[in-house]
Image 1 (spheres, rainbow, N blue to C red):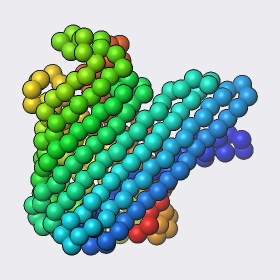
Image 2 (image 1 turned 135 degrees about the vertical axis):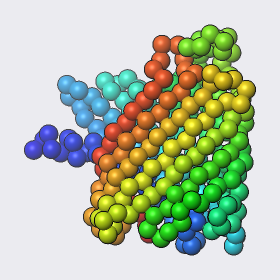
Image 3 (image 1 turned 45 degrees about the vertical axis):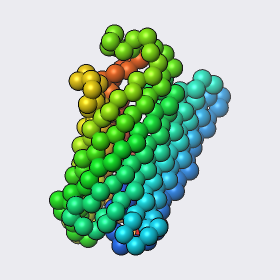
Image 4 (image 1 turned 30 degrees about the vertical axis):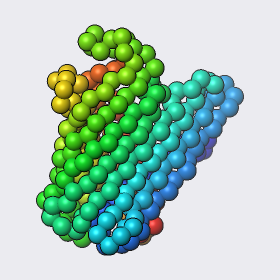
Length: 252
């Protein structure tokens, strides 16, 4: 029984269910606070907070923000403390083509990133636009500044400077599909982000989820996330993979 409860508490409440900015609802939001604490022979503390909000401030404009905070501690030693804020402003998102402005801010304890910020503009093309399934392609260009805690990298050309600044181009692909009469929901969100100035500086990410609806506002979900960064602090791994099980809570 204790083992079952242990794994139930480890199941995170997932908010990676994508909000479609082209929907007609004026306000859509998700919020999650989850955690796990264990003491005794093994001391563990895990806390996760995530939010997802889409809002129409004006008739033809949509603002979407996705924010998360993660803190993990094992044996009183901090393993993670990460902040991520993804912010988008869309104009006429109900059209086939529509422009966007984006601004990202993040930190990453494991990768020793003190602060990363991106600002850019782009355009989205709706390949499929249906009530039950949609697919979008986006292209954007950003200016990025990343401040690291160290100045020794896996690529010697970047050694000696804790800050790496560059212009990037990003190709985004994301979609969501309701299958088998809404008994299964498949979602994916991925991007490839090369530097426009250094050919060896690039990153990519793939996020795939499968959901099984339990109730109107609750789905069981399996999520797989894989990330890769070509430039990292020396002796760090370039790839990270996460397989999680949990639930999606939504207000719509």
